[in-house]
Image 1 (cartoon, rainbow, N blue to C red):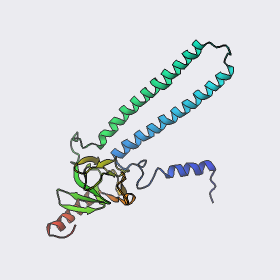
Image 2 (cartoon, rainbow, N blue to C red):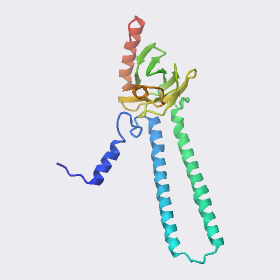
Image 3 (cartoon, rainbow, N blue to C red):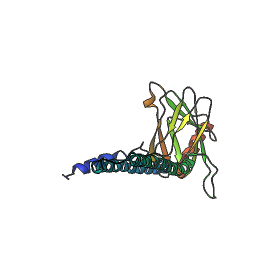
Image 4 (cartoon, helix red, strand yellow):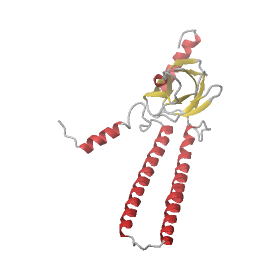
Length: 244
């Protein structure tokens, strides 16, 4: 049996939380990758800030023991102002501004913006209606409807048009992109893209009632040719009056 140190077990337990069908730290598309990158940078900055505060506190206690008993009030006030302006105003302002600029660019991945360049596939549209406590999905160009299941092609952007029949819900597939609220009487749009085939888990991320925790969906990313064949078969079934 392989031996493992306490540190090794801690590392294994920590890393195990970064994977899985519903982990935002295990991205499978460009939108989720941008979100995860921002998260890691925010974590890194937070760790540095905490470390800096601890070091500053240690230095303050050390200097306090060695400080002159007759230090003037003017010197104490000057030191206090420097810490307050530098550590309480300048440092957080610069840090937040940098994270804001960095995070804003990541947000563009979630928006249904016109695609730049040529040769890439046009976005696929999927209409999603949330209700207590499940999801109804429809491919409007083909009339195909699904229940608690979303299928999409690998490598193609998909614009999800999200609405709600009753209360506010939130559409979220953590490994593929960010959240978007499903609001009654309003349609919000979020863009997803899967860069690898697989099965992912979608979840309502807004408390919406008794069975909120069970309001999930299965998301299946398929190779483009397999997806086209599946969609064509479903469209044919709809055309002849069968159930897709």
